[in-house]
Image 1: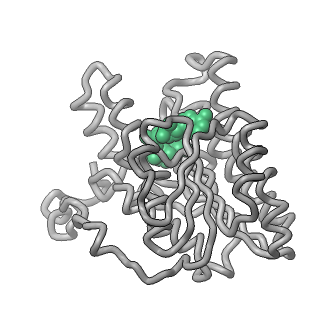
Image 2 (image 1 turned 135 degrees about the vertical axis):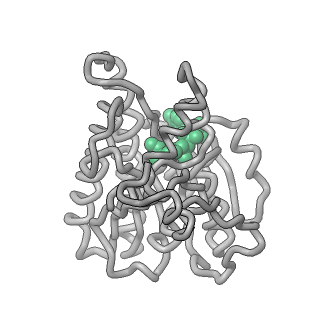
Length: 274
Ligand code: NAD
């Protein structure tokens, strides 16, 4: 449902149109990340995978990591991409990865999990799992890679938050929203501490994006058709975001184009925050 806009007006405004089909070869290859080393968590599918491909296309040397070796295999061997299996809750494995990879220019903390439910449906175990995967992982990974960035005197850290956070409360996103609000606080704290040392730290807050885990969430409903329509209706633009809708801002934040930006939480959400 688009607030204050008739169906006819929506059509005229193009809100009902599907997103432009973007063929990888038609996307920019301007070398905007040439010479940069980037490390991405949860790059096996969804937004993390899209970021790995987009960063590599723009000339970065990308370390694409994920806990799932099977999905990572899908991007292994692509130009500019090396893959490693990494569980972002495993501190020892993160330390080992940081030693292997060396100093970074760009760190994209993308790993996260969506718990469905209210506070009464969230057990202490659910709470701990979500905070461990969505927040503590970012602390562990950033802590491991930050010294290398400080030695270089520059670096861009990008953390994935969500519209469901301190930006908006959404139904059945109790612990998810709490973790993603924590990501924004985490981002701002790092930005404040290292702003004078060349480190930038920003968060992105997507609306609903068409990724494999969204499909799983939709399939888990008793009425998946209605569930999908409800997810679409959350965006006033009347559609789900695509991974490519999100990778543009990630390239921008990773690149020199955003050198004056730090400590921000960028909403990219089909109008959810209008
Ligand atoms: P997804 O949920 O489909 O995939 C998640 C990936 O994380 C998988 O490849 C999985 O193997 C990996 N992963 C899970 N546990 C891990 C661990 N312990 N260590 C390393 N990797 C692990 O992808 P998505 O929907 O693009 O979500 C990615 C991020 O974007 C998440 O943090 C999510 O909260 C956030 N986000 C997604 C949406 C959306 O609508 N899809 C919206 C806002 C924010």
